[in-house]
Image (cartoon, rainbow, N blue to C red):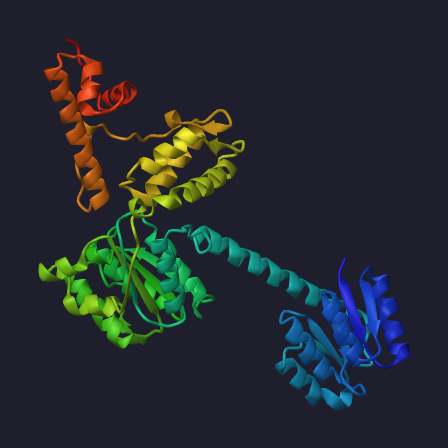
Length: 455
């Protein structure tokens, strides 16, 4: 049931409108002055406000302005006499939904009210769809409390309002595409197209066609005109993922577009101008690629006006529990599974793991665990990960000082325990005394390092 506020200084008009609208099943409140109407609108929500234009003290235009100030989405219909059509047009320009000329047919009023209510519903549905799209694109799902993630969030908020080119740098799986979507949705371009393209997934000759489009007959299989991503995204944002894999000749064409905002379709001669913001991402070191002449230095500087590095998951281990909680809740719903929770042992294992595939690997791990889990708890057995033993550890490129230190300590401890066991001929109590640790600690370390010494 919809609620309608009727505003008119004439008792007869208020009574007639109230009876008509009540008979059609609406909830109706009335106000005999603009001041009363504004006060009622501030105290409660109305789906539609129906106000007279000519009233003493506060006219319909001021009522419209005051109500719109309190609720920009309010649906206001203005009633006016034949002699004040110009004022009604002014009201429309100031945000009125429509106007009715007196005297009016009740059927005309009913149609207009229903149309206004439908418009309000459509607006609400569009907002929900927009929120759902943002949710699916990750706009409101950037999770992280670590200091380096808060810095990324601060930079994104700072650059979002401009048209500056942004380059996201980081390993695969860190979620660069989510941050790119966040910038678009925080920008003035949020209601315009957001188009993404993976430069590594499309062959060079097809990538040019995808970006700039083509005319019919531009090449053998081209039977019709094709609009490119830049043309489709006019007014919005284009996200170029893995831009470092782009062919050198295509890089030159991209550079020209970034400098001039103009392009020609393949096989065409007409020059098109579009207004597009470009956000790029790469998991490669583009500075090294420039030095090795695999990436144009001028294009690099054009793309990286505002570079942002996304930290790998191993550099923000404190965020793992938050991410696990989010993915567990998400995939339990998507896979229609009962609500589950990771055990302390499973969580500890995930916090210790180095996640070479970053957040994407964590997400896939949780999805698999939800499928395998038949009870209420995710255990280590459900996780397709394990902490490697000392013998299996190989320091990765980019390993931090802490990881190097842990590895070195484990290697040294295992070697020393084995040496002292040899010297004491397997006497574990004597070995513990030499190592200046208690007997229990020695057993734990032997188990951890896989030492099975028999005399």
